[in-house]
Image (cartoon, rainbow, N blue to C red; front, side, top):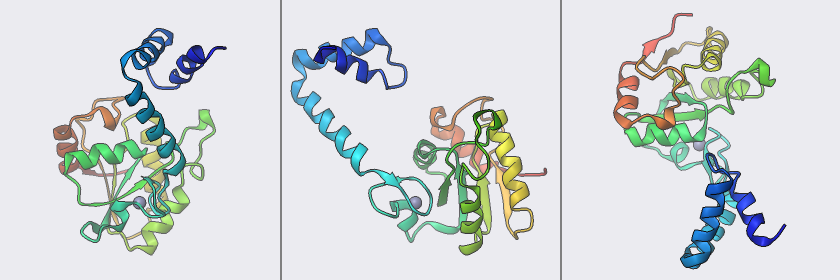
Length: 197
Ligand SMILES: [Zn+2]
């Protein structure tokens, strides 16, 4: 495979990029964006090499602990549980949440062989006990897997002296947090409901 085809093929790892758009990107960069192309390559290499998961919350960071976990101005007794690091960004952009986060490594999905241990639920429980968390907000998607995960977390924490709530309805069914506008996230957080399982 020649260099040009190899680059086009590599770009296809990005979501929504098919063979045609990959080829268009390659020609676009070669034609008049060579400096930007090189900048893109070096940013990509730096990010892929240096970004790791935060030891406490699993969010992306370059240090052992992410900025959010280290921030003394965040409410340490309020914990928001999300599915992926991109959900943390979405909620942060809404500016509606002042607590800390815990990022699950996915959702419970028996079909994909993902159980409670695979998505880090034992770590979540330890963190809640060790840090004396008082309220947990489950900001998971309203998919079947999301609801299964909420149910499981509720069972896991039922003996702990904490409030557990989940985002209010208004999140479109099947909707991922990252695609919601800040107002929707803000109102879903404000109108969060206690869970009765
Ligand atoms: Zn963190």
